[in-house]
Image 1 (cartoon, rainbow, N blue to C red):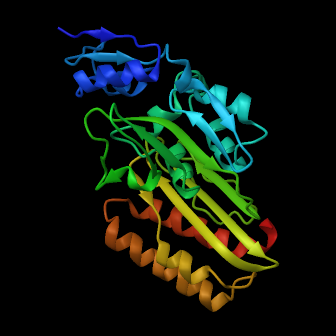
Image 2: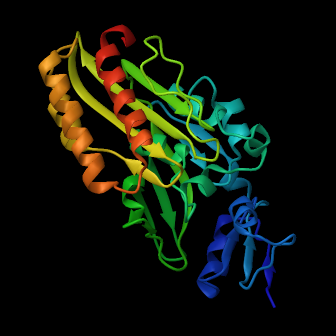
Length: 293
């Protein structure tokens, strides 16, 4: 029989976790509910319900960064942070579907989802968000990109993500695009393929670029595919850094070819028409950089 704990402070939560390191951390429980095929959800673990911990639902801003408590609901982040959080993250959060999920989902739940690398995770990844990991005996900050090892979450028993930190860097270009429920991106050049099967998951594209005049200082871009794959190629990014905008056509062709080979080798389970969407999106992005500034 499961025991339900309802701590009101982080310290109380950590003491319970120390005693029950395998307990299920529970806030909205949406991931658990969506995974269940039964009408009622059953638990075979002790449960730590964190909804009453105000510290986990706070947002604080300094001159350099904003910190978001891991149990903060997405709608609250949108409302409180609409003028301070990076626009690319705000757009991704607003695009969460169905819309009423934004009242239920927490940012920590989306980061730590065991089975899905959702679009919020991919945007936080490209922004190199930092996570505060705490236990009863330690506290540390890690990059969100180090949270997983071969798609398995790296949290040790007794550890929990308590905060997400976003640095308030300035980007000259930021892009977020999503193909959801099979509908193609609405791009001016109409370069993407037509609708795919309605039961396929979304493809999202996120990118940030920093410039000196029209020279690329840094560029990061990432695809999230069907909430299963997060696709990023740092070698391709490095080949674009130091280049002037507009990108030389010959270099652009080489970049697209390189990324296409990466897709074929590492993501052979992604259907060919969806790979075409990814490649066409990247091709559009490279060609349109001059107009996105």
